[in-house]
Length: 468
Image (cartoon, rainbow, N blue to C red; front, side, top):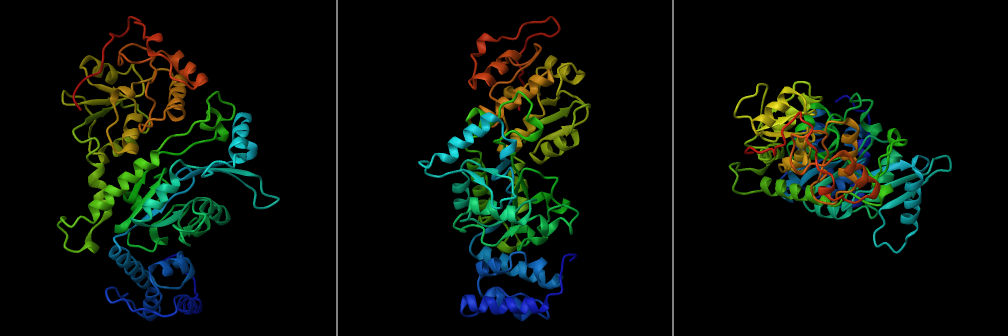
């Protein structure tokens, strides 16, 4: 392994620490690490119990001079112990997955005013907005926990051994963990920060730093590209959590959740249900594998995701941005993607209404959807309603509609309930652009019949149909 250090004496000292902490070593009757040289130490560390092992040397590969076989032995032993407890392993990204943050100086006046209200209201039963300044030279920072996150961690901890793994400095990561888990009930010392992986893995996250076999690990993250290629099949891709305006949006007219005094709802509750389903399927005694250690949670994840768009045959606009990524995502969800249009195609994905592919879909009564339809289906693990994702002609209106969908919609479906088109040839429920502007300014849904689409002579008004 590229991140080993010569700390033989340190490894010996850990054995003593564990001995003092546990009082005695219990030899595991079911699981033994078949390693050489430090095999005795590994078995003794293991004998103190899995929880003690992980708390003492969570980032074991960085701290000790174990060779590859010994490290794999540690992983195997801990994996066996967790499986015996009917637990898998869950690696959680923090930034924009379980919480979000912003420097106080970056908040808009509306955001700053609302944050003051939240942080000063001590009558709230569970505070989820925090102002942090650990050092006088440190700029004050505001943290906002994602809705439902504490209940999520509590229930997930019954099914998983949980790790925090995020691309931030070690002091900052520990501060996040403290806010999420103030009683240290869920993470222990299983916390991995930027210092642990950036220099050794070219800035990519990697499961080499997790004390578990990869066949029992799930990852929750909003960015797939931050992980090594071999670990991407372990990822449950999340929708990015945004509460404050980002720096690039400071001068924009779009309103953040904080400015609108709203939040995203219970998305984490949806993800928790998916995790429960994965866990249940993995430990299902009716599966063909005789030994639970031979099962692979990645195959369970792949199978369940493959039902989402099963039966959909999708063609893409050749000029569609991010086509390779969306194509791969759609296939992972069970769709069949093709280059050429034919009568069996059920959906056409495009970003503009005037392309030949878009016209073909309208003429043949096929579903014509915006690319975000695939992403929303992926986030929610269910096929989103096509009529919520028609194509939007004007880029400015598209951005406003997307902003409306992420700030005002409190339903389980995270996409905007209504979207805007600039031409006829889309679902009859579509709205004119002005209704988005009104909705954002009022943070309230406008009445649809006030903003009908007007025939412009270029397209024939129709409602998309076709079977899915």
